[in-house]
Length: 434
Ligand code: GUN
Ligand code: ZN
Image (cartoon, rainbow, N blue to C red):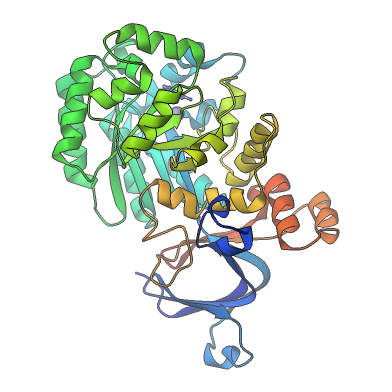
């Protein structure tokens, strides 16, 4: 099914290191202003400068001169079932969940409905240049079948899981420790490592699980150590107090997950805005990962994530749109929000920092950097083709851009799905704007 020996000409940008971790940012990336990328059987086999004789060497050469091609974007946190309630007015986390989220998620008991939304969401991801995502389903197994089926159809590398929650939510959305364990296990057996799909054990967050459920979730992760874990931590001040009051024997919110065997290198925690020094240390010690969701964090008034701190403590971070608390599927728009979150803390997020975060950084966060996130030889050919300018304002700004980094910054601040000209998954074009 994969494209054989396909060559693309264009401008190529990818990262080989974190711009914040090298002496000069220029050491962190490779840029080919007029480059050639060759794909065989869905993998990248060559990336170099374009040569005049390449046109005759590759008669079917796809000419994307003037467009910017990067590794496909990685979204490390999204709730696909919350798409239809994106932009729900007026509440912070706990009230927002009760008022809008839970009633919406109830509908995913219906497989037909779940499949309809799953198809919509996969299209939306691809339209925004996102080729991989770590996805929350709902409490219903069939919601996870629905999203995996749609991702498989497009050959996407996608990780998803069934929400486990057995208390503090409406009855119609609760599982039990036993059913949550058994259904998750069945989904692992069915989907984990099937093609490019992988499973994430998904306790929603500590307040909606009993100790018994968290015990079984940890046990399941121990039985299948290469599965992921995804959950939420320290997003909102009221949530933190509530979590601590429900688990008084634990030393803080993150410690709840640690005690139940849910932290570790394959565990991705969304938000982590208000961590204590001890919790930062624990993240670092356990090599646990954070999904930074700036759009959501501002929308729900949750707070400002201290990204620089994560770098100091060597904690891996990916970017999450967190739709439906996040208000955009676009990694570019989400980076625009990330920049502003950093500004409000007196810090910076350069364009290189930003594009690293949504490509190689995201892949590293998901322990997938041997497969995706860069254009290194042997990587899976997931690509996003971007127009530098798609609107009048963007065109005017780009005409006045001062070099590559300035152009990239303008793209990060002003860009959105209108800039995505095409998206490739495993070497095949799965979205084309025109
Ligand atoms: N914490 C627990 N569930 C959720 C959710 O659905 N969205 C967000 N943003 N935070 C959560
Ligand atoms: Zn979330």
